[in-house]
Length: 87
Image 1 (cartoon, rainbow, N blue to C red):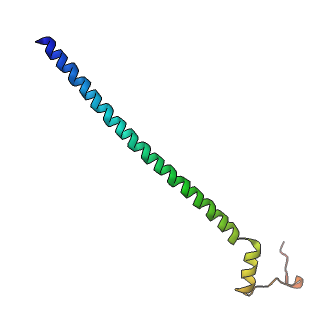
Image 2 (image 1 turned 90 degrees about the vertical axis):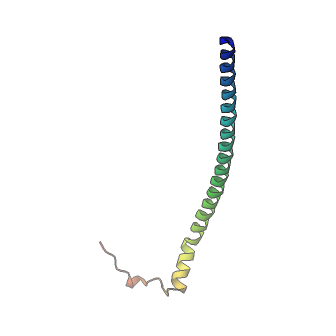
Image 3 (image 1 turned 180 degrees about the horizontal axis):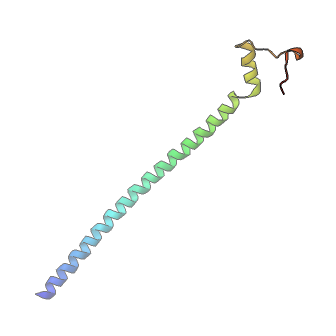
């Protein structure tokens, strides 16, 4: 009788261990899929960030800023006699 109880206990422990293994593997696979999704999102955001930096550099070129200053704001380069040098 005692041997049967030990065998049942060992069987239950083995079964519980197998169930725990299956649950852990499932959780691991689920986390891996989430990690891959987050890496894809990171790559897309990095690409978008690079494009935005390039666009910002394009919009901030000296020629463009000077053109807008002349056309939209009516600014002109001062004559040399209008320039005052401060020390």
